[in-house]
Amino acid sequence: MSDVHQDGQAAARHMAAIAELLARVQEEVTGAAALVDIAEDEIERAAARHPQAADDLFHCFRLLLPAFEARAWGTEFVLRAHCRELLERVASGEDTRPGTNAECLLAIAQVAMEVPLNGAAAGFYLRMWSAAFPGHELGDRGQHYEALYKGAIDDIERWTRKKLSIPGRVLRDVECDGLHHGQPAACRYRTEAQP
Image (cartoon, rainbow, N blue to C red; front, side, top):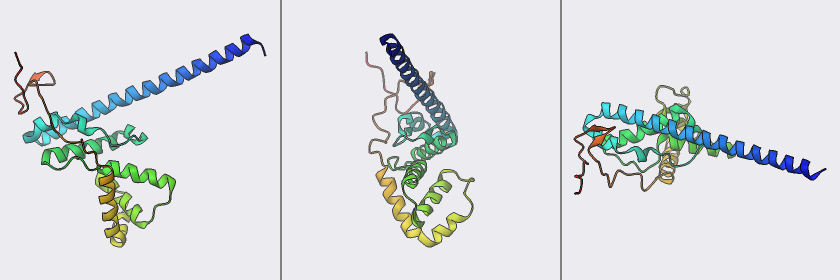
């Protein structure tokens, strides 16, 4: 094979690798933009439901980032469930550090790809699905598992939420310039500009 032919093949491989890298970057940028849009939409909805917590909700965007990477975060209803749960915690003053229902669900789903789930783990999956996506339950099997394994499911839930806990996922050190989406806001976090 000639050097020119080999150089051409090498160049083609490099171009293919660059094209693949650019496609991945585009996918990540598109995914990040979708995350921002969904999070902002859920923040706006939560503020409408909880006007007394609107300032906290406006400033909690960074809390909405998931605990780990998973392909399912690209699924809108999964990401919305995660955001909604954290926003409800913020509005009610609950701890935002433990894993969300969606995070727990995705973690147990990843485990299920490696090993078969026992009865308690399957019950935990069904519990997390029902909690994350109310109105879209997977039949009444969850009740059966709850009746048989409730204590073990409770233990798995406590352990999983703790493992997925993010210590820094708390609303703190908030500074506000008095503008929310470019509009003046009487935000409780407003800090006066220094001369």
